[in-house]
Length: 285
Image (cartoon, rainbow, N blue to C red; front, side):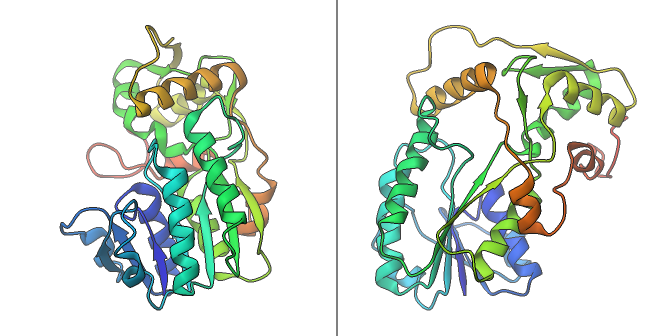
């Protein structure tokens, strides 16, 4: 049995899909009690537990062979909460833990990266028999919500500017890599980057979107204005885009290629599989 946390979010759900495609039994942990047909339809066992509440975790982890610990985005409790759950996994006798981190967690100008860096440090010291870390960069899916607006206006809004690049990775590839780390031997104590196959500036993304949509698309620099937000999530987002604007967010695809046994999907390949507003697939125009 493999336990996957934050299974109600896009990352956790994708990992559940990748594991069930391998025929692995999965216990999918969600934060709120409501129907989860996207998980039960895959044959996953769905349980409800709060990540920051340790009391139910002995039951959640009972009989588990492995744990995939993904945390909701921009949560200030991640570092300490992850530390507590690593301890719960050790006490429950879980044989393998894989932690969902981020590319370059040591970039402490971004608070949510710093939290994952502290969680990685706690994992190393947790006394677990087997652990691995997956460090994905930004997802190609992060731009999907913009597609209808891009199709209508011909503009791609870029809060990270027009000069620096990102190695956008398809979430399905991240999930497949997570399944490899959860299921395969010989990877203990490893930290594995998951980056897409090419550095993509906003103008290059606009070019690819234009080809996909069959119309001209122009990248538009959207400079964040005003003070850094006071909320933790707002502050994280603002400082993240400030970092991307100054430094980009690029990694090498070679580690992910080795995990998958093939090159990771390109952004164009991702776009080809994105459903259009009418429910089909392929170009929106």
